[in-house]
Length: 207
Image (cartoon, rainbow, N blue to C red):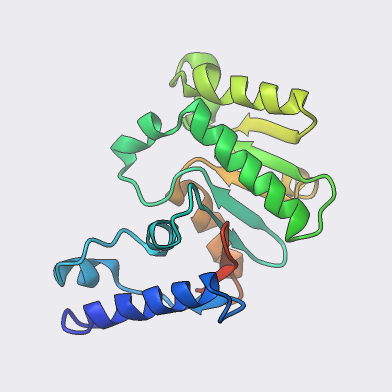
């Protein structure tokens, strides 16, 4: 991929997205693109997630990567680390978990999805000694959604959560940010994993 063909790449993504939205196509599959090269061509491009969200005028799109053994969704996508804590708000978590829960039921046929939720900070904040986002934001949201009947386990430290004793009793993991959840999934799934974007149409990105 070169700077010269950056605009063409974006045009193909737009064409494919529009075709899905108008019913011409049933699904959309892409390969990886070089985000830096597209930006060097003068086209602001954060990633497929944000591009399709804007193109489809969807209120919110949730990014999830999946293999046969593991599904990992992200609360935030392509953000600098310094911006992540501010981005994780009660409203965001309510919306992301609702979308994830809905699509696990309707698209994956899981009647009562069991979702593991990562904390943001090391050791999930260690009771507030390593950050308070868990206490201030994540736990209250999970408590509210559990009261509505959702099966949510967390927040758990990411270095603890990705173990068989937790994963064997879960249908999906919600990570707080990109590099918290995806490396673990990509190690076993690098040859077979794909991305699934919840709402408004089915989209898969072969890795």
